[in-house]
Image 1: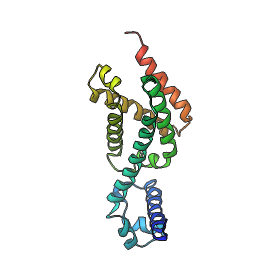
Image 2: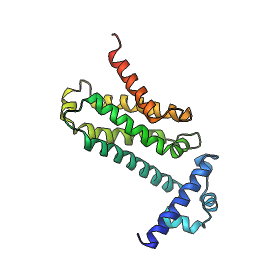
Image 3: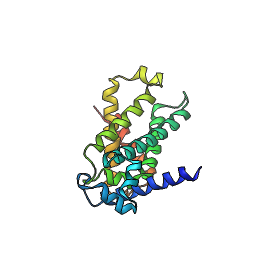
Image 4: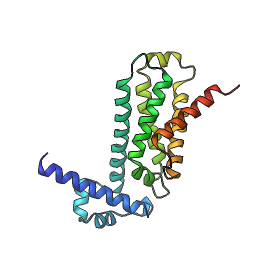
Length: 196
């Protein structure tokens, strides 16, 4: 990696860390580029070499987070075989995702807090749904046997899963990813097997 590329990466990381530190204490709407630059120990001109404004900064950070989330789902999907049951796929997906969310918990805590910008929850949900849709539609057996419209299925799965993630974060991540996976599987099994 060239010195320029490495310096560029480090500067962006400084800016992002400064932004997150300020966002822990102040609402997104009240944060200024000057505050971010001061916290990062750079000048405003350096900030503008990397981002157009604070909205661009947050958008780029969200895009990076969502891309990494998508990569996690893709890597898991690539390992699926036709002999794995849908239930086993769901358990593997949940485990992978809980570990992913644990590793990015510091960013998610801030973006999902009252200080985060309006709509982060919805943008995360939409990115999650789109990636799940792309991967589920590759599974011909799943698509053929689904008895409800896929939009409703994805809406239910994403709301349930992301609701668990948000509750986990609100509880201070008091459980391990493995415990969260077991809880998710238990809830889905309960719904599936509860008496009519």
